[in-house]
Length: 313
Image 1 (cartoon, rainbow, N blue to C red):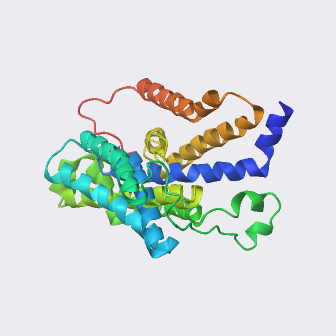
Image 2: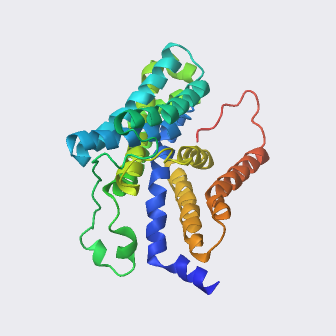
């Protein structure tokens, strides 16, 4: 027990918490943006997976990590744009569209990987690049805090910046306010001149951009290569984090951090020779438990009268 507390109090553990939170934080914020615009985008898993592969392939072809990152972002936006076309133009059910994107990315990524490398498992044969880590001046010299907050991938700091940018977008800009208006009541928004379809296109493509950062992190920072199904359910965990955050940017980010803690804790428990199967289910158990608390909390709220509008979140 003393060893366990020693691990939890160590700077390496909290450094790991931030590291494993990053690939959950990006898709959580991405899902929040579409939810605000009245669309439930469940394609986070597939978008991240395809972006991860695209980042590796483009960086290997160009020998540039930054161009590879751009390729990952373009892949994420492309998949979200396709989902937007099917949902908004062809009137496909958004849930079915999201499932289709996830299935396409799962099988399509393996097919493309095999065509390029003759390997269905990893992309280690591709000379892909990784994004740099940042050692922040002054912060890195602070005892304890510097060891926790400095030295992360550049995408980790972009993730933190994204939280504040999206918070500002949603609360301080006309676009963000229009997204919320569309999500609350699209007919009312349409009646005051808001172009609902345009707003939803923007929200979906923007969510693909942010999820693309998460995919790039997986294959260009978290690991130095692409591997089959490397997202390992993080896109689904992100949807749970967004739901538990009740559509609030800060609350969603803190929930993503909670899931990151559970993931890092599971990784540390492997040091104590516990069964790998038991340790591996801890992050998913935390997800189910969190969603259970979320449902119980919602069921305690009294229903609104039929003539009373839904309060904004």
